[in-house]
Image (cartoon, rainbow, N blue to C red; front, top):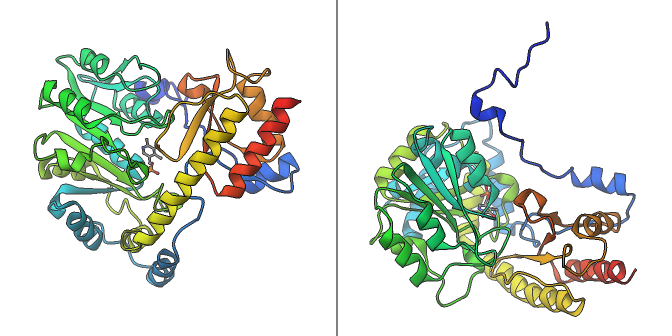
Length: 373
Ligand SMILES: *Cc1c(COP(=O)(O)O)cnc(C)c1O
């Protein structure tokens, strides 16, 4: 008997598609037959983890026969001190991705709706779809969140609004005064998730810190991650800072032991290693200059970014005659992995993460070669 196992899944699951991740690097390299592979596809810290993190992981590994501390007592103490909040305001997740899912699973179901922007981080869509809530997607303006349009999407059923600041894959940020006006106009009973995955990289004077706004807006849930500037993507750890009552709700739906003991130990060491963050930010600032100069010299238009990646136009009315998908393929065969954005409904754009100077140069060399061919 032939059984349709997708048809038997929850109706929310039937419309979903698995997240499209890349092949393992070694496999990609083997298939492409290239000597050298440069990966600028996932906005990772190109320096790797800090030495202090590696030492902490080695030490913690000796106890990996034990379950982790499910409440992350020591890490929460450190985070609470850093942010000037109570430990009860912190929710730890298996990546901040997990925290976004916790918000959806605590606050959304088929009776409710959630609002996010066109071109916003794809996990908002996935989390909302899985919850069964209606997604209300506000049109972007110049690839940026249009807060007025987002406000117009809010209805009586709306329980959650997702905002990425800065946003991935577009790289732009919202200024403090605009965010404040949005929050002031919004029903305070709606949870606003402010995703600050790239917080460490942003130097703009008018870039707001979500945690600082929580004294005025108790509906604000700020998410941060150890995956980007801290260099711990592979360990999966992120967190939310929120009103303790919201944290209570999130912790009710959190899986026990959702964060591994190695991730907890690594995050504590990473928080204490400020020099590593400074290095990541300095490398990123220089790389931003190098890549934007290089893209401009080759005639590629890019979306202004304050994060550790840049999305540039390569198809449509863009500059590469073969289009973004073909350029991406050609870069792959030259050993450069960047991110096509077709699944973000940006089929003419490609996103390149900022790497080490020599990685950026490798990418620009290949791009120049392909562009003149
Ligand atoms: C990378 C990223 C995250 C972080 O994901 P983790 O699950 O913490 O690795 C969150 N939000 C945005 C917008 C991102 O780009």
